[in-house]
Figure 1 (cartoon, rainbow, N blue to C red):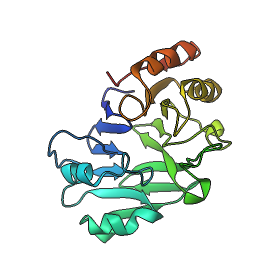
Figure 2: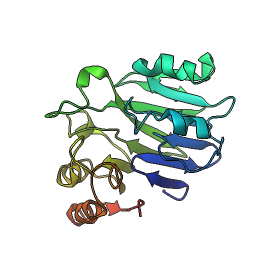
Figure 3: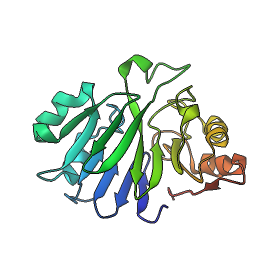
Amino acid sequence: MLENFKVICHSCIKYEGEKIIYIDPFKIKEEYKDAYIIFITHSHYDHFSVEDINKIKKENTIIIITKDLEEKAINLGFKKENVIIVEPNKEYEIEDIKIKTVPAYNINKKFHPKENNWVGYIIYINGISYYISGDTDITEENKNVKCDVAFVPIGGTFTMDFKEAASLINEIKPKIVVPIHYGEIVGTKQDAVEFEKLIDKNTECRILIK
């Protein structure tokens, strides 16, 4: 299920299948210019990085964003028809890829207010559902997510910490979980180790940030 996925760092995920997909590109090392679709969860610099988007976008790249980023995306040179605005709790089909948006927000922190309408994504690829949660705490919405693979933040401070993330995963029970959002700005590799220890045996934990 993860054969074509890599976590480049932090929350930056790349899918290298028939179509190249990035989620929250950050600290991209080279000018790849290979993105078919770019998913952005929210506007913070470590998720919407102009420098990194410019390294991967090409002429007809599609960018999927929340409403507050529309003008910035146009200013980056994306064609208007390739700028897709999404809202929480909606379903979309983009270039034969089905997606659902899940609200991503903080419960007891101020960094990601619910009213900003930021999102996580459930992306369906070849019959497999991948949940990329965005920067979030445990919420009523994400406790109801059904997915095969989940990518969840564990770094704490701005999002769930590893204990909270493990609690969420043990409730929604994906087949595979990948911890993200650690090792660069907040959180440590040890957090990932501790996270894995807390995951129920029926869910496989894959640590992709080395």
